[in-house]
Length: 203
Image (cartoon, rainbow, N blue to C red):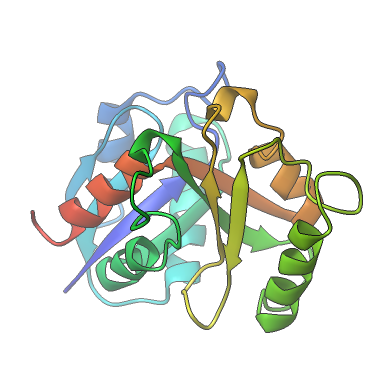
């Protein structure tokens, strides 16, 4: 038996893909998932299940939600240990004086084409960031920082963000990274990431 975290893309954000969490829990319980619990209203689920490949389980959840509740939403599934590694790999979280409210994580759900977001992508991302605030660099405002950590370090690639001016004002948002990386993505604030990691290990 494993504990998993499922991150649903764009649920209950700006009126997109409205889902009631109680209905979502019932739908996933219908798949045989156990101890299904949700966190907040934006598509964060923790559950227990028999061991299975995460991508396969994510696809099953996507199909089930569409069948039971209507919208087809992207899903990324991570084991509890993988979620813990996401927390540990944040290069900004341990810095002195960093406000947790300024930290976010963008999870890459799927690539537009087959292939791995490995060292080559990580190197290209770092080069784009070093290029500065204008194209071909990242559209970061002064003080904003972004770091890409891909596979095999993490089970799913993550862009870590330090946004001292707030997520609502940045151009380094979910839509930007979906365009830049050619992949579906979903972003969480750091408090939510840590809370899900804690829920997955029973804290």
